[in-house]
Amino acid sequence: MKKILTLGLLALASTGLAATTAPTLTKGTLKIGMEGTYPPFTYKDDKGVLTGFDVDIAKAVAAKLGLKAEFVLTEWSGILAGLQANKYDVIVNQVAITPERQKTINFSTPYAYSRPQIIVRKAGTFNPKTLADLKGKRVGSSLGSNYERALKAEGGINIVTYPGAAEILADLATGRIDAAYNDRLLVGYLTKSQNLPIRGAGVSSDTEAVAIALKKTNPGLKTAIDKALLQIKADGTYAKISRQWFGQDVSKP
Image 1 (cartoon, rainbow, N blue to C red):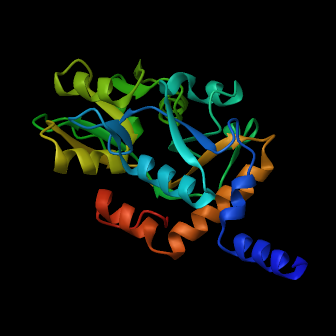
Image 2: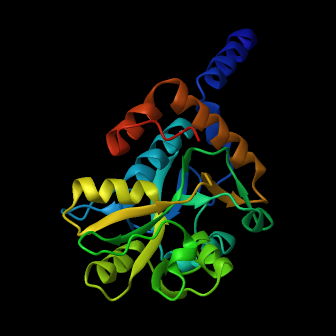
Image 3: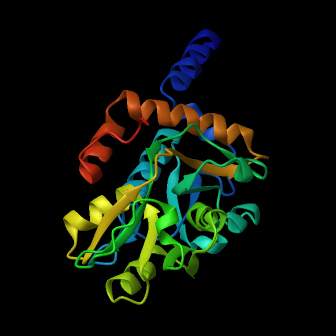
């Protein structure tokens, strides 16, 4: 009987279900912080249902962990502080890995790669190639984002901050700002799927690695999430999600 029990436990561990022991704020649940206003990564569709690339990735990871995915929506400006305040276990919201962020939070292995891109009005004549071309212009950026930091580092740019991408693009479309600076994948998706009068201009040569953010005090959850990410890539789940949203594999630089 003891031998049978031991074999049963080993079989359970091999299926990945043992990962449910990963420490979370609420037993059996993975609380996931995200904006909910950042298409195509995390947003609400016409029926008010939360959807997007990051939503699908988060659900797939939670499933591999044997946990129920629970989404907690918050503005980007306070999303990292919310993690530290234990409002959620992780953030799945295109959080780029930066040295500054690594000082205070932990990251999973990267699950996506992209590049920043300058965005302008489709019908306009302004065609900036680099950040230097934005000097003296009004440029929209999400408050507290790595995009805002890059604009500040360039200097000479009139940065207009917003709580999220939706507000930035709305003001860009109506001419309240001259340009925006955000994710290349966002531009590609919106120009194909929605009738927004915007277009991509100059693209940064710096590739950004995106990962799931979590607290440094929870190494057990990081280990479990890293394993889950490997599993969804190995079984084809990741490729299916990536092709659905972008028509390409975004798991490689």
